[in-house]
Length: 404
Ligand code: ADP
Ligand code: ASP
Ligand code: MG
Image (tube, rainbow, N blue to C red):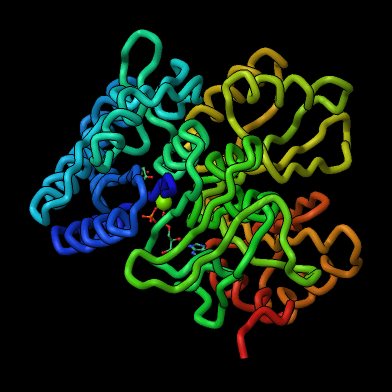
């Protein structure tokens, strides 16, 4: 008998028929003689709708109230899934994040996990029940409801699998696994059978929303192998683990993030410490800065261009304005939303020419590169939003990732 943690995402529980499908799958897993703990997300579209309602009332809703609001999405799903299981004769019980002992810090809307106590999950399993846990939510030490950042049910599942020492962790979604690019954008993309945590982490943090990047970070840190697979078929999915036996390809996949805002700060004093002050202010405001370019100072002034996640633009703007006021000069321009397109692969460490192939593919399709950033295993470029999908496709093709 194994202990299996399964996570079903929003699209897999979108309507009652899909919830019935999930219940059947859970029951079938139990019938094989396993203990099953299930993490579910809010039904597809619910979280976005709740966010939109809050923003219609206030442009910058209070973070604690957002957690209070968003956590109801998952609470609906745990109850409905449990009721669906009862209807087919499978004993089951639902638990909120708090009831499952998912303890977090106080940072509302992107809380960090402190501990997973598990509540009475072990006893419930012993009594032959499936335990259905609300993903995405926890409680802080004061008992306040917190959430783990968008896509956070992935993290709930992986953290529970670690805490319960589960034998298997399965992330069920609406595609067959992790592909060489988003299969909705690149029909020629193919499923990757195995991935190293590192590669999955880069893909996720560069915009492949199939997994939440924080969840992959946790899996890597605590060595929790997991499989991404389809809740609508029994095809083998993608195994994500410490090491893979895949042949050494240079580029494993292409990722795209369409939520980057270009920020230009011009007329900064061209002197040591100005950039440091600016970026320290942004760091203090917890804004993630990426793709930084500083041009050569002229007439004693320098210009800095960088990107910030679009949902942090408001915080970034306030922080930069305060810093420029202190410096006594400098001008802020928030440019349009950009897309960041990236290639990822551990093989890049030992291969040259990746940037050349990528940039040539873009140039020969008339796509202009605005900013560039690189690390050991990825290269990212910022391009216009309306060129993003085309950029992903031409890069995917240039690295011979298109399936035959
Ligand atoms: P869930 O509701 O199950 O959490 P998500 O919508 O968060 O599912 O993630 C699944 C989606 O991620 C897919 O429908 C797909 O469009 C998208 N996606 C983006 N990049 C990739 C990729 N490289 N491989 C697979 N899916 C991807
Ligand atoms: N419901 C949350 C979201 O939409 C968490 C999740 O789906 O994983 O972000
Ligand atoms: Mg998701």
